[in-house]
Length: 200
Image (cartoon, rainbow, N blue to C red; front, top):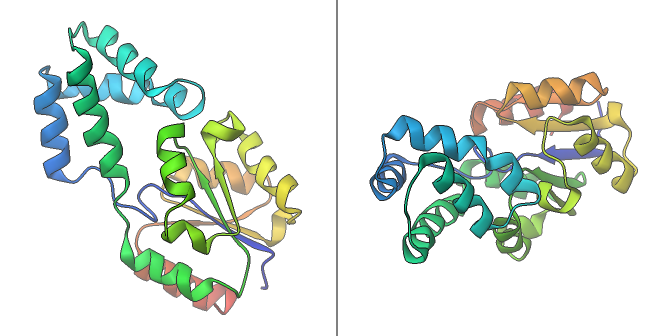
């Protein structure tokens, strides 16, 4: 079936986040039990991805943990965290390069503004026709409004749009709106799916 649009998630699809060395560095810098740190990290991430600044986010995490981090300490946590997000996954980007020019490509990412502005001008993202970030559209996946925003701005039909994400909750939400979906597990599996299902 031909497609009007292919929509890619970023984290864990086009990038590889949180390798063991980064996880260890963040946990050491946090200075609290790892499970507590990650609970706070995840709890406040939706706000960071939409409206909260980096300073606000790390203040929320610190308050949650009762941590007395000074400005330099928070800067170090931010640098490790965001720097790690700029970690391209070459096998998937090779697929993107192959698709470029054959079908319109869009990025739909839950990303805070500091990460989004880095990605705006990055070489890998230049392959995409449009970049949609949660910080700009003020909503995170799997909120239906995220997918509707993409369809409205691109003019693509839901049934002729393919959405690719590593989180089932996100692909399931897109499917309920009529989008075609692929639950990403590996670049190799995605490659086989595109060839088998869409001749790409």
